[in-house]
Every structure is written in C-alpha cells, then in structure tokens.
Length: 195
Image: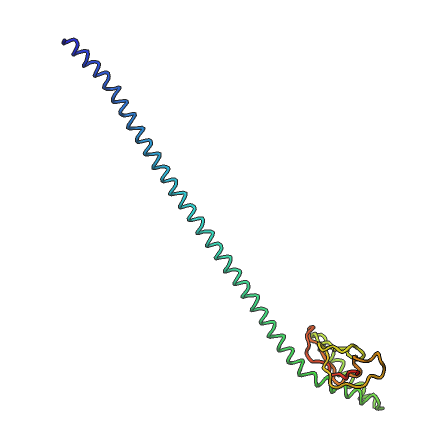
C-alpha cells in the first residue's frame, strides 16, 4: 500500500505540472482573449478618434475656403465700387461739359456763314480738342438724324409731318445731340420725329 501511495504521489507530482501547465495555458488563453478584446477596443476607439479628427479638419477646411471666398467677393465688390465711384465722378464732370460742346457746335454753325476765318478756325480747334479728349474718356455722340426713332437713345421733342413717306417714324432733325459714355446713355438726343 505504501508503494501504491508512492506511485499515486509520483503520478500526482507528474500530473501536477501537466495540470499546472494546462491551467496556465487556459489562463494565458483567457488573458490573450482579453488582450485581443482590449486591443480591438483600443483600435476601435482610435479609429473613432481618427474619423472625428478627420471630420473636424474637413469642417475647418470648408470654413477656411468659405471665408476665403467671402473675402475674395468683398475685395472684388470693393474694387467695383471704387471703379463705379470714379466712373460716376467722370460721368458727372463730362455731363457738366456737354453744354460747352453744345455752345461750340452752335458757334460753329453761326460762323459757317461768316467771313471771319480766324474765328471759324479757333472755334473749330477748341471744339475738336475738347471732343478728342472726351472721346478718349469714352464719350461718343449718338448719330440720330435719318435713323429710326428709338426710345432707348432718343427723346422726342415734337412731331413734324414727314416730308416723304419713308421718313415716317424716323428722326427728321436733331435739336440737341445725345451722348453715350462707356456704352451707357449720358444724355438722350432731343429729336424731331416724322409723323
């Protein structure tokens, strides 16, 4: 019996390391599973953080682009307003000179029947210089005589019986010359229309 007990003890001693190894293997498997779960959990958390930071960066980038677009619009609008102000000031100045042009035209018409060549030449010189300068600033006269009456460019002062049938609805005479500045009406041509 002592022998049996010794054998049992030996078997138990031999089995104990095997059991201990199995227990350790089971524990290490449990720890490995827990470690994998923790790693997966950390990986998921990190992935979520990456996605959140990516979203934040994209939002910041979109805000930056929107701000830059707004600034570019502001800059362009400001430049357009400055240009419009300069054009408006130029238009007002040129509009103030139109009566001088009218007076020069009247003077040249009056001097056409005169024998004073010096007055004709001087008035013509002044008129041409003034007109050349104003043309360089974008002023152009509206050619109205003999053209179809157009309310976009002409202002009818009166109607007069047309000398011929084809002159009905056309401009017979120009009372005051009209002008365009940069393609826009500065002053309508005052005209007599054939009825």
